[in-house]
Amino acid sequence: MIKIENLTKYYGDAPAVDDLTFEIANGEILGLLGPNGAGKTTTMRILTCYLRPTSGSITVKDFNIHDDPLGIKRLIGYLPESAPLYPDMLVYDYLRFVADVRNIAGPRIDSRIKELAHMCAINEVMHRPVSELSKGYKQRVGLAHAMMNDPEILVLDEPTSGLDPNQIVEIRDIIRKIGREKTVILSTHILSEAEATCDRIVIINNGRIVADGSTDELKREAGSDYALLISLRNSDFDNVKKTLEGIPEINDIVLDNAENGNIVFRLQCSGRKDVRPEVYEVIKNNDWPLLEFHRESRTLETIFRELTREV
Image (cartoon, rainbow, N blue to C red):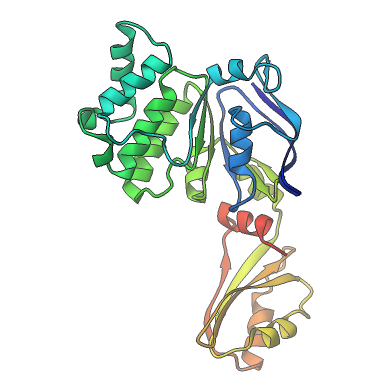
């Protein structure tokens, strides 16, 4: 349904998006992941025809962003990170205003608003001012706004940002329900959210794709690499790193935290050999006070951290 080809966007001399190419299938829930500044929001803004790319193109069905941006906009509902709501309006009046803007006429307005109120679970706040709503309810109203014209594609930029755990679960359930009928593209910093919600994940870093596939596929592609998390008390990281670098299976030693003389670091290891006995012998022989030592399970979080870590 959506084809992104060699998409590039520069701000001055800096590339926010750098030659992205991938496709999104009809009915897919795709998670767009990446650290701050990776290019997620820029990609979404180009897809929704809010920004023009420096080069490259996006085709949605038979429409191209250069030739027919209005045709693409008719197919898309877009919820930015901060829902663009009018705080002084009642929720019902606001949604009716959105329906008018979308040229939804006559009795269809009320029926559509009722559908969205039920779908987004906002029935109980329909006659309250937007300004009095919690962040979770504001996001739901913004989602109803994005869904007003019954779009084929829904684009959600950080839809659960700033929400509490209960609100996150509620928004996740709504997205899953919508995803049964529509193509959904969402960006998020909550990796467990992407893992629980999305059919497929694209990770971008510095404007480029560094991984693409389902969570299971990403874990398989990561191969037999694994990480050891170690915490030592009253130890010097540079000395520890220099000592452990001699173990062949250790590819990298990354400092996570250093505070009050205690250090927390990860050993990125390759191969099927378990090097924990060898590492423990080194720790014991050097009399480093050991606080924590375990092998990390392969999760989306560890894969994400490895792929997006600045070298």
